[in-house]
Image (cartoon, rainbow, N blue to C red; front, side, top):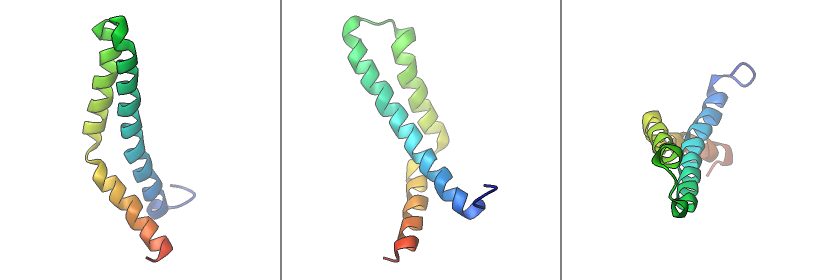
Length: 79
């Protein structure tokens, strides 16, 4: 924010806020599916899935972040 300014940093922050929860849920779900056949205790594997989904829910709707990034891309490419 110090280098780019608030308007430009807003786009990067929105991109990160949209990407991190999606990737976190996807990764923890994959890990849970891979480890389920080993009868892993609930406190080790299931917590990551629940925490990542709670993190994604607490941040708010990802569509808003996708719209901010998309709006910026349209402005730069003048579509």
